[in-house]
Amino acid sequence: MAGKPLKGLDVMKENRVGRTIFLLSLLFLSILCACDKTPQKAHFENLSTVPGLEAHTKEFDQQVIRVTDGVHVAVGFGLANSILIEGDDGAIVVDTMGTFEAGQAVRRAFAEITDKPIRAVIYTHNHADHVFGSEAFVDGPDIAVFAHETTGPMIDRVVGVLRPVLTQRSMRMFGNFLEDSSIVNAGIGRRLELATDSTVGVVRPNHTFSDSWKGRIAGIEVQLVHAPGETDDQIFVWLPEKRVLLPGDNIYKTFPNLYTIRGTAHRDVRRWVESIDKMRALRPAHLVPSHTRPVSGEQAIYNTLTDYRDAIAYVHDQTVRGMNMGKTPDELAASIKLPPHLAASPFLTEYYGTVAWSVRAIFNGYLGWFDGNPTHLDALPPMEKAEHMAALAGGKGAMLTAARQAAESGDHQWVLELTDCLLRLEPDNAEARNLRVAALTSLGQAQANPNARHYYLTRAAELGQQLHIGQMGRPTEQMLSGMPMGRFFDAMAVNLDAEKCADMERTVGFIFPDTDEAYSVLVRRGVAEIRPELVSPRDITVTVPSLVWKQMLAKERNPLATIATECDIEGGRVRFLSFMAMFAPEFEE
Image (cartoon, rainbow, N blue to C red; front, side, top):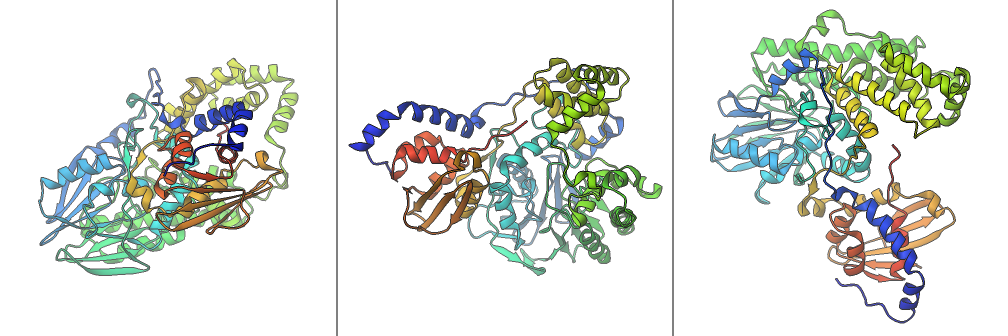
């Protein structure tokens, strides 16, 4: 839909504020379209690696493994596995990789096993590495897509409201902006397959359930059971005739992410234990996780599941015991260790989650951020604390000397603590920056945990090599069309720059004629209220096709060109551009 031509008073206004438009346009365009740049990759010289982590890489040798008759699992094609179940007149695919390209590669591999049509796809949970390649497997609307009833909304929440921060933290954790030589593996897979030019999409579930579902698909008896663990929507798949258990991400060959450093809602580890107990009771003969390689043998699987649930229960129970004794998260994280028989299990090596991170998450899940120490009730702001620390040390010069000495003695964590303060006080202090980069690099290369390793190294590159983390993956039209419009407006609300509109009250209405939807955004002195309706009176009214609007907010369209040529605007194009500029997020490094 073309915009209305400018005339009369609009032309006068456009001329009078031409410079303002230009500056706003540049700001708006630079922020919203920064992702179009081809990202650099961070390079490190002579990085050492921990031997155990190198050996763990064999877990992800790329191949399609035959588990038993009619069941195969594709390992090493991306971060997650994809599982093929061959039936009488068709096939089932469980989990679909993290990009369309990875999904295509797996589908070609599966086609070498069977040419039977795919009858159903099953999502074990909402994580991107399990669902964003689904369009490679779902050829049309007749294919059933099974998931828990909360999986769709969880995908929408992460993709919409939290996408900027989760993208940034996930790219640090998975090391996607590091050169290949800096990555050994990603703990639960060789690496996250997402790249700047990857295509991501998700086919919406069309068969959902609450507690459980069972039936026959392509002649195979299938049971789906809700089993909260790594996610609240997690399910497991049980094939009783074959005695094959597909546990999703509730077990894999590494200590689990009871908390993930990319950020997550609280994971109820008690329910995780209960879910594993449900799986143990089935006495499966084959275990096919959605990460790492399958395991066969009833007793071996039972023992592995028992150790796994015991490790989770141990960390939970000992954390709560310590909380009840009045201990703080720092004290508990430093003291709680797995007992020797559990620490010796190859399924509990800390290649993904860690006990210390888990302890902190459990504490926070029960009691929240306050650790009980009154010093922290109204803690000093970071800048003020840095100033006091520098004064205590005898000045910034003395603090820098202490950081230099800590670096020489290999006390890298203390270097980070000191440079936190120094770089807050003097952001351009080159020596403090170099000391911090060296400490981050040293800590990173010493890590057996890939998540920690990648995070340290990526932050070192951001600080020392001016590495910029941008948007990864390009959503398909089908994915954007399927996402509820309300999620896009929710994302706008949480990105409002309150300072820019502290004294503003403005109402903008949006009309989407192709979907017969309308929304209003009421900016009221620093707060954006979203209403799924048109309200009156309005300062501005915008009419635009729904997909065009979604693509612009997803950074798939140039915002200036979209606003100029695709939007019918009543109330002034300049005012609308100024309004939208208030919703552009800016990261603080």
